[in-house]
Image 1 (tube, rainbow, N blue to C red):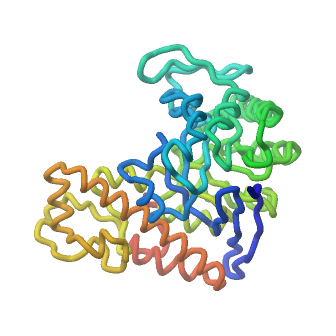
Image 2: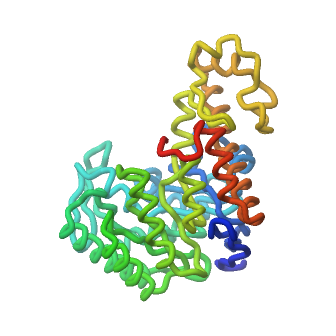
Length: 378
């Protein structure tokens, strides 16, 4: 079984964006890559055959949720998430750190770790950096994350500095107990909110610890897109050139294109699956809400430029009918299409980088998808 590695293959002369190859024990993956989110060891509504068709073979699992249900010990008995969900390709797990942010009303942060109340039962739980790595060792993903705090973007400077320094200490503690560094690549996570000096401090200290890859956390958490892109532009030259950069929780089409331009290699987000369950589809001409009455007798495919089986098989009229009838198949079909759309978008981004024309591609894509060459719209 091969280990983890990363190689750069091309730098776009027009934009500075990167193409590379991510080597993992369960496959090699061209970057930039978008990774569908499989929170509970499933990408919602899809089976593994479908996940394989709409992904490049690298998906996410959520440490916090799988720790609570069914428990990492049970998943370990299956040989990890891969054996549990019958997925034979690559996996990445987060650390549970984002739940420190999203469950802020039911947790306390201490130097030792985080004290939670179970978001359903109210049971008292403790999660330390060591716990997070142990759980992820049991889950068996190819790429795992350091335990971090993701503070609100607009936290005050003093709190943010305290948080960044604690996250660095947690990163060291996690690396020290990591059991399988040869087969599970542990990434450090850059934090610091809007403060460039804290972001610089964060990445410099994480580089000293020496991780095989680096994640950028604490973005797409309420700040403007302009603020996010400004921070990516600032971080780009500070990140190790020869290691993968992962922008966590970002997945709208404009962010994927702009993120690639600013040197990002890996992305994930629940956006395409979440909006699909509410009837919103991503198409080559922009988003459409299939539940709208305008599609009641529309005999066209969902997206005439898409070659996924949903677009080759069904009319917009039928898809609208499924949602109006509250049929589960509607959720499945739009979920499938949205992920396929982003898989294809990433392929187009990689081709544009290799052809040294990513800025040209961006202008054309934005005009078609957003109706203008630049977009700050989700």
